Image (cartoon, rainbow, N blue to C red; front, side, top):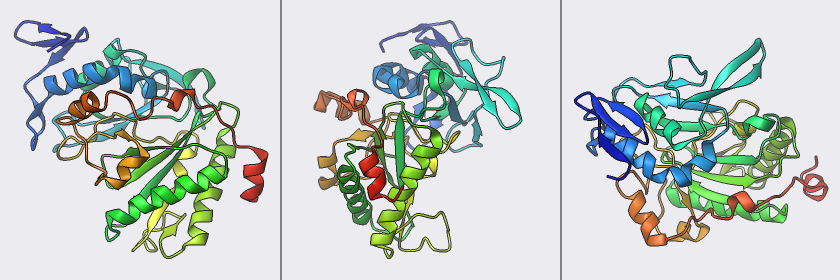
Length: 306
């Protein structure tokens, strides 16, 4: 495979990073090893890196694989590989260092650390207080059929269009969908969170039998939670092209809106089939994402009562 060369009996190097225990199986159902996952990340780095580089990162580490013990981590440590950097973030009780990467080697080094999920902030290191994206996580109750999740995504897109905002769609690799709105870095966290909450509440008010804008488990049955809480400072959402620590090695995958009509599922794409999809499509469905500069305008705020 490209970018790999033997490194003696102790491991294999990928993107300059030594992968120890390369034969360790991280996804039992798929037989995907640590080496195979590192190589996968090395190959898709051009697509994945723009979504995670130079941002505070929270990661899900599963040292023995997706079927073993996993834990969430956000603070950087001096013991991390050199390719894994950090950024200083102001917290309630003072400053701390958060994980941050800026290279393909950094991605692969995270795999070496047992990372199976990447959850970036919605802002970049140089302007932590001005997010450049707004997230909506469509989180269905277990009894909600998939067709209604797809319908919710289309409805949300229409609402956002009426607010003069273009949105982008991706699978989560879990059970729902993410609708993501790129933003110019002109708004603060509270402003973005308030706007996203108002959007979620508008959907819930218009169709309360299908949607809700609160995280109440007691009220969730038969409904889809329009989760806007990922727009708060310090909140994260799984990155586009990140794997998930779930059976089958699913990948959170950017998709065209038209794909909702063709049997798309939240776990449609995984480490085993994503690259075939990319070769077939020959373009990134989100190719205009980083060129889309839009703001939360006065007219849109007025329509939401803000």
